[in-house]
Length: 173
Image (tube, rainbow, N blue to C red; front, top):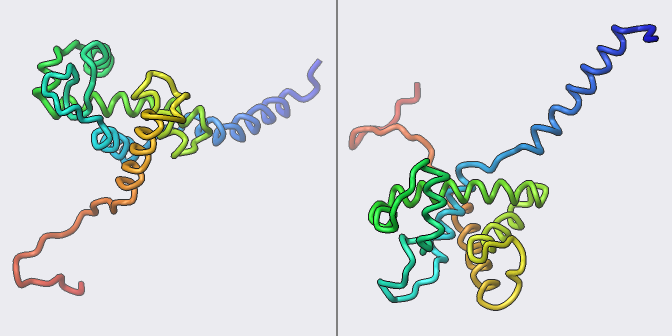
């Protein structure tokens, strides 16, 4: 028999509120800036085959069988490789969608370790696995992605500024 039901209720509320910040932290998602940096890093690090008919599409060098599933997931419709190749904005949108998903997966897996998350996502991007990119070509690729990612993250973000006509300076008021 419960002697003080109000006390039990209050204890439950206190415990719930006490756990809320922990749950929010565990469900934290990556920022748009992190996704944009990852997308650009993947683009810059994409292997260049020098063969226009190499079977890979867009600046991110995506395989046709991969992009079909990605476009279904991100656009809710399947695009052909040619449609993907010929529309850089759509390609960036799809790559951003997948990069966000994979970075979020890695942030959870690494307890929000940003660089470890980038490494895992870059390894997955190249091999389909989050681990095993510690030697050879894949290790070099992952390091390249991390370097480009860090460069992108180090760039100052654009801040809104007021445009003034030529020869005018802002008034002190």
